[in-house]
Length: 453
Image (cartoon, rainbow, N blue to C red; front, side, top):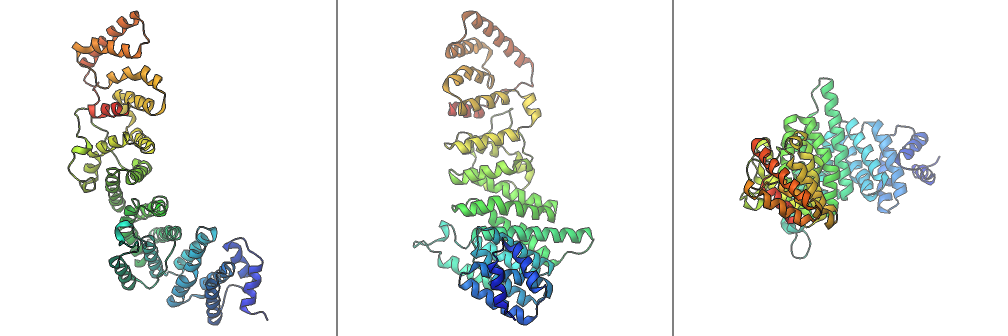
């Protein structure tokens, strides 16, 4: 009779396309049950395959382990050993390949079906530490290695919080968090639909995701390491906000307020933090009921604001209605990086409601001129530049000189049109004075156009 090693080798020789095909072959060859001795042999063969970097053989052994463990009701000790030393190791070794995500999906499904949420919580902590295991510049000593303080803190955290300790690559760690959050949300939602009390370990997972892990993710958005920024923005943030929404509406609002404060702190800094802060604001700006900028008075510039953007008032409505955000956005509109300017302008377009654009025509003029300055050639800007007088109309006694100055700049209208335009502008000035709804744009916004010009 062929040994377990021989059977696994034959399955590997078939070169199954991915873990799913390998699982089907294992079920056809072995069935779905196994005794303790078979599990023990399978564990040893899995470790041997990983140590020899025979990833195809390791994938076959992992598939067999997943099939047997899902039907054997193993102890927590056995499940933890396979999780740490086989499945997570294989997911890390095959990072950036489809099989890595497949292993994580099957592992999380196994833990959820076995109600092993304590182990799932340990995996979550392991993923979180892997994302921050190589600290950013401020956590290094002069040699470029992690400082002793950081190394000791990580070691103490390993000993105090869990038993699973695997150094996962950043993509694998972020995928693990995403899969664990999705499973916890499903399990909690199913318990709520059946009017049952959710597993306390599931609540522990969700609370950690919306607490310490969400805080760490906000900090990773400003990391100088590209892989961490990408993981935080594309995978961690959507998953953790999903967890917050599943917990409660208050929890979701608290997380969004924390994210808002982080974005304000990032866009107040130059270069990379501003670039990422604008990207996050652009992605989630519809989630914040931002008040339109005021046109009744001139708000202070960002440089005149003494408070730290991260120390915004705790109440979401107070933080969002503050002119501090608009002052920072104006700085981004004149940033030296074209990408930052484009993102800031798009945020402005999304945050100005249609009724504001209809009632305050000056915003349409502002955006038209800004796009001209950023996209079109100088001769088109020259022809349209007289429109800037509509943003901050001059006093009636200077209206005639202003009109002549604009015409002299454009140099495209004959003398007959000059007289007609003077007359129309005077009528327009009188109409604006009679209509209180037509308000000039504060000069701080007009200054944006002059700076770009």
